[in-house]
Every structure is written in C-alpha cells, then in structure tokens.
Image 1 (tube, rainbow, N blue to C red):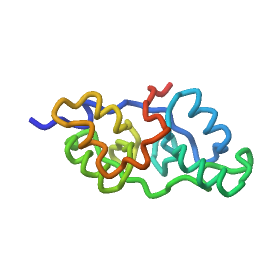
Image 2: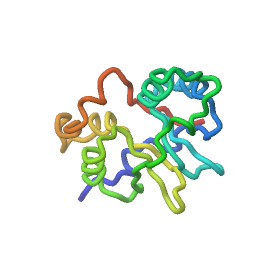
Image 3: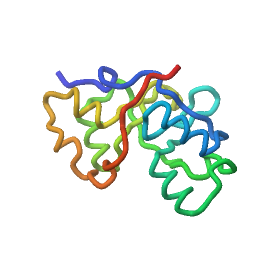
Image 4: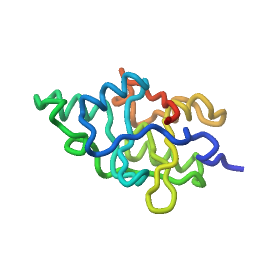
Length: 152
C-alpha cells in the first residue's frame, strides 16, 4: 500500500498573511527555524509561499526595505500543492518536476492543512533514498533549513 501524504505532513503549519512585512517574516523564519512560510488569507486559504530564497533574491538583491515591503510583493504566488490523500510518490515526482523542497497540503477550497518538507520525507521514507528525493533540486538545498515546526 502506498504511503499517503497525510501520514508524513506537518499538520497546521505556521502561516503568514499577505500584509506581513518581509522583516517580520524573516524574524519568524529564524524563530521557527524554517526556510519558508505559506501565505494565507481569510483564515487558512493558501494564496502563496515565501521562501528564504525569495527574501535573498527579491528583497536583499533588489535593495528593497524589508520593513516597508509586504510579503505579497515578493512571494511566489503560483504554488503547487497536493492533498493529504495523495500518494508520497506523487509528491516526490511533483517536487522534482517543479524543483521545490516544500509542498503545501490543502483540502477543499485551497484550505491549508499541512506542509510536506522534502527533508522530512527523506528522513522518514524507508523506500526512497535521500538521493532520489533530492534529484533535480540540489542547487536550492544548500544553506537553508527545511525543518517545519507545528503552528500555534
């Protein structure tokens, strides 16, 4: 029987809103020891994701003021996601194809219910080797953390 994403995902991850400043998001990333935050509206509707790479390239790299820049201005708006009932193999294929290390897990009308970080998959999956999990995404894995903490 295939492993379902719901068995491995981090439930109720901490999320931020589009109005959150980049500086506050970066502070929270350090506090939570994560490399990305899902962005939600209206409670839990997923509308984007902000990564530490977004901050480095789109804020620092452009010389923007992190206090005056909202995360919605620099975050990735087109987010790929899966549901808790999807198979882990599908998640691995999607991560490799889209070259992402984290997948938001949603239900119904894009309601965020979890996150599936690649590092957690590599640690917990006995069937998959770490090399297979990371194939096609090695350039984006250096120097960042993908450990997810439970939301409050």
